[in-house]
Amino acid sequence: MDFDDTPEEAAFRREVRAFLEAHARRKTGTDADWSRGGVSEDPERAAAYLERCRAWQRTLFDNGWAGITWPKEYGGRGGTPAESIIFNQEASQFDVTTGFIGAAQQLVGPPLLRFGTEEQKARYIPSMLKGDELWCQLFSEPGAGSDLAALATRAVRDGDEWVVTGQKVWTSEAQHADFGILLARTDPDAPKHKGITFFIVDMHSPGIEIRPLVQATGLSHFNEVFLTDVRIPAGNVVGEVNGGWAVARTTLASEAGMIGGAGQTTTFQAVLELARACGRTGDPIVRQGLADVYTRERILKFHQMRMQTAIMHRRGSPPDPSVLKNFFTQSLSKRVDLAIALEGAHGMLASADAPQDGFWQKQHMAQFSARIGGGTNEVHRNMIGERALGLPPEPRDDKDVPWRDLPKS
Ligand SMILES: Cc1cc2nc3c(=O)[nH]c(=O)nc-3n(C[C@H](O)[C@H](O)[C@H](O)COP(=O)(O)OP(=O)(O)OC[C@H]3O[C@@H](n4cnc5c(N)ncnc54)[C@H](O)[C@@H]3O)c2cc1C
Image 1 (cartoon, helix red, strand yellow):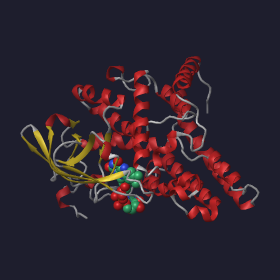
Image 2 (cartoon, protein in one colour):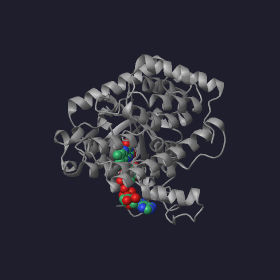
Image 3 (cartoon, helix red, strand yellow):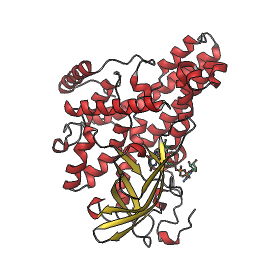
Image 4 (tube, protein in one colour):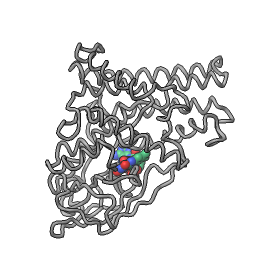
């Protein structure tokens, strides 16, 4: 592995640091960090958090740091993947985040940049990078999650418009979104992967009803979205009609890599501080748990560095995104399990009654959704088997059957 910056990269890193020093303060790793506030069920705190995320996105845009690898003509910086990595490395030390705004950009930007028309890119990308318009991803349905290509939301052409009816579920942050990327079935007679179209939908359109789902954490991160005769202009198709699966794959690939490469709200250092605060660092079982958490954090870092070396220095091959995603979520589980164990009986309390305002309790419950979102750990294991280990693929005997004839749940 090679971690040394080239002279150009070192100069870029200095520029990034100067920007961050001027516009943000360093993380303390405590409750004082506003960027930790995304897990509050208090509506006022949650709204204030979203506004700070939006304000930080605007600061990035105004100073030329939004969309580092995205083209300049759409408001990006026109930089390299190496510069994007350097920026994220430096920013991770500061009390800043774009929260779900940045995550949604990673889902929406790649398909629009690759398959979108000039009009679509010019209309949607600058306002996304400014944080003026927020986005969500309308892919999963009650009968289509891991088997996403089974989706049943229908879009029927009517003159210059498509009329869409169906139900989506687990739609993160739909309640705040102005636009969504939507998959709908446009040819039920084609095999399931071949009759899907990728649309941009205005979330304020008549016929869209958003019902928040309350999670075990008390938060409503995701929603059910019902679409009834929603009219979408024909110009909002991204890519080819019935060719939406290829467009969607751009989003799915970006999603797994994004989750696996994400920074962590819960770190080994934070668990160690908790062990110290609880007076448990002398306990041999706790020490063993801390060593386990530390080792996993290092191994995850190793995978991320492999990715960095492959991208920045074109040496070696990057790890499979599914390996990153699964290792990330497993390490998270180890950290939060240990943290709750450290709190002992207090670990059973919730919210304001619990230590640190219930921070570890929320992280503990959020681990389960982390193992599901962006594709479940089991499905990513299948991909590791097929792509990384070259094992025989899962039987897919419904691949060539018209979607109309497939059994539906
Ligand atoms: C926090 C969070 C945020 C999300 N945000 C969004 C969003 O913004 N937009 C969106 O469209 N979706 C979103 N999702 C949905 C997510 O992509 C799906 O939940 C996920 O793909 C799994 O689908 P499912 O829930 O239908 O489970 P299922 O596919 O029904 O799976 C049920 C169980 O069967 C297992 N299983 C299924 N198929 C296989 C197989 N072939 N081999 C082995 N095991 C298998 C799964 O691992 C799982 O344990 C989100 C989910 C979460 C948890």
